Length: 190
Length: 190
DNA sequence: GTCCCTATGTATAATAC
DNA sequence: TGTATTATACATAGGGA
Image (cartoon, rainbow over all chains, first blue to last red; front, side):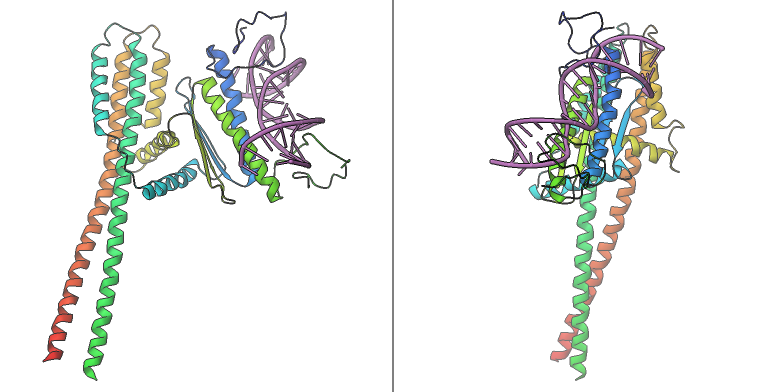
């Protein structure tokens, strides 16, 4: 019963059907927000699909909503979002390697988070609204964990790659040495 | 100078300004396709941004075009697409790994945990003691994440170890070959 | 969450620069 | 690619079921 976006225009007639202009800012009313989310999510994914078909490109969309029942929404023009993500990651990583930077997610950050978490846990006695903080913390915790894991994985992948290269090089050297030996044997026979 | 989408309508007047209906299928004309791509890409990203602001959600978009000069396009409501992707990946991967044969972890899957967590959150209205459950859930969540990370690390460590061994072996073979060569040279001189 | 409806705001196809 | 114009197709706010 309430205008969602622009409140207080003082223009309400008996019935305002049709679309009204909507300012792009957080929709306050929870219900309106949910409805808008549904509609626009569908719209976005439809657009993504159209784009991929019309222009022959791969598109991936990920939507993460922290509230409500729905949690994760995704769209992908190819088989799986993961596929696109992997290609995306490879892009990024390639660029990173070129520019040669190793931005670290410090493990200190996690430590701080944990400390904060503990503090919050101890204060949870009476105050009901620390629940929100807790949720927030949980999210942060998870994100951090994921990031660190990812970083670690990346580093290990680099190591593996490195070792594979070394191995290849050694194999080649070995081959050359073998050839040399063969040639020498031949010469000696002559 | 050519209609992009629907060719051969036989309706061309002197000038057909304005938008025409567009079938959603691969745009044949390369030029039109490129133009459409630009416009629609911008449109999509704008929509994604609006969605994230209006509905307070995180949105990530990745577009990969194989043709033309432009290659990769991305949008993210948070700092980086990578961040969102990681969160997405963690979802998928966690469920995959946990539901796999290595389910030495708790009987509960991560997805279920998250769902339960949400349910609990929605029920937190009056009952103060669900906070405890929440904390418990958080711990479980974190433990699961840690376990998964551990498992992955372990696997990678095994790989690295394997490679290191291979490397060592190759080095030794190389050394032997070198020695052989040296001996042969000596012999020849004699 | 879904579907329908209306009225209107917006995106965009075609085109030219 | 970016910008601008025009006319129209499409998306969607608000409301109700």
